[in-house]
Length: 403
Image 1 (cartoon, helix red, strand yellow):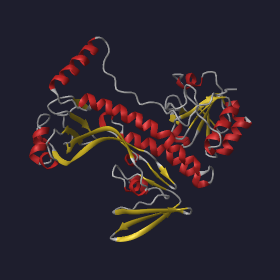
Image 2 (cartoon, one colour):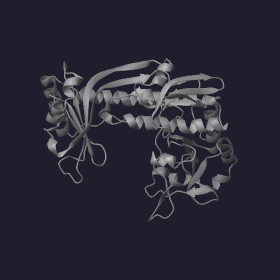
Image 3 (cartoon, rainbow, N blue to C red):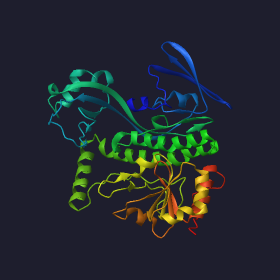
Image 4 (cartoon, helix red, strand yellow):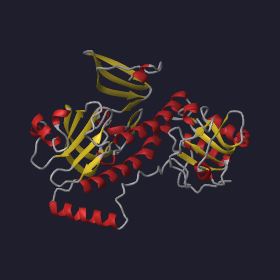
């Protein structure tokens, strides 16, 4: 909030309740209640980031796909005294059939436990202070901490079947809900926002048609769904209440570890849609560094949240195809692994990570959220990028000609 308050193009209104949303060809009208009075807010587009019970989603009549996971857990947040050494700094997932439990640090001075409810237990029972103190007493002296907050949540695996209707989009928990076993809920919401924000900006400025906004669902929904499925698979390992099945699970995990096959978390997959079908399209671009090797500067701190074209050689920055990309994306920034040129940021690549990604190709392009669009020759990248922005002929399943 402090950071947002510093930004002249952002207005923050607290104590404001969303009531309804309407849209037509001219724009969107949000009806809100502020200080007891109804007010209207007009905009070209609206984004519902209003959580799992999203009113925006309900007003749009968007249905949810149920991925088949629904478990009630109680969440307990506590305040921990400064310098307290009685808790691990690591997140712990306790696969205890008597009471599956999560114990995680949740920021300076705070810690969280999550306890799975058993059949027949009610929120009224488990949220009593004496019940909460008894549960955390197996981990810590409850007198050493302050109970700050507790709530019962149903851990869901859900994905909205549609992420856009007209001028309104949904992202975050409004569009998908995951069990927390991979720690990816907020991460997925951030990925949604990073995917959408630059597209909204381009459409608002008139630099791209509003069909670009359709790519949000195409790119993010399959990825979010895959991550949620990974979390569900983790949850099926954790949420075993049958002692015999839990013992069999434990024996297998121990045997695998002793055989040199330790348990590995499910992968967060790379993006598959809206990128070129080469070996780096859809991967996350590594952090780019520039300046003094002894005290380097992050390239993102220089160029900000914009597309980044990385050239093998700075001399290529004068290519007419680079000009074409700059014309279609005025905020595009250019960096190079070798050589210097005006307006071209020199990249430090001490571990040759970006050089290996680029290989023998002329350039690679990363979107503002630093998902790699793809690599190849400058003409091909310029053509494919323009097609992607306009939605005219881009097909990520096409064979890419790197010439």
